[in-house]
Length: 250
Image (cartoon, rainbow, N blue to C red; front, top):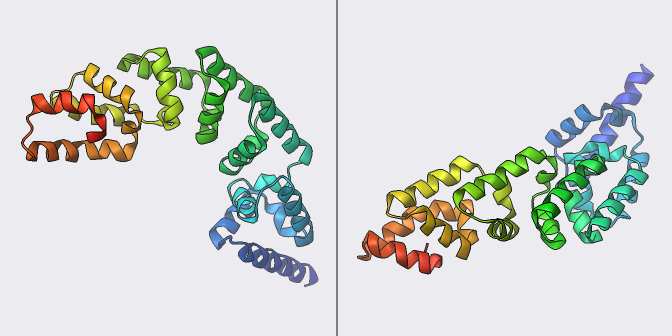
């Protein structure tokens, strides 16, 4: 009948449009599951909405990436989006910072402003400069989903490891992913160092000098690099002070 034919035509038109713009069938199914009303939405209306998103400075790839990751953006009011720009710009984010943030995590556009402010205030109260906070949030926007307790717990973990407040601020600003690292993963890697003659103090001194050593890919190389030093003839008693003084060797 005509209703079924019209619906089938609308689905085909929508699928062809999304395919032409880089979305595969898996992405299209995901979008229609989240907002089924898109099936009956005019493709012309969707195009108008996409043009509105372009006006914020997003490019085509970014717009369709956001649609795939957070389809609700198609139904979101411009006022809501504008309010988020105002909120983040008040904090100190540039428009470019905001766009990077929204592309990485478009659901932030729907997040309660008071929840965002509380997390920013937590970092300010701890001692972070605003520019540091912007760096951390821009790099790891998932922090805005973490509870205050989860963030405090992560800070406490590094405190227990032997870092003071200033050092925690420094290493987490340099390496924001420390806030989402698994404690056990770092503990397992540093356990290898302890087994090879390092004290907790040796390890913290090394990290202070070179926080990037805590990147997962670098942690994975520790064992191989220490074995290489041993192959070259260095003993454990020589490797510890050598690498503590110059952690780039690791």
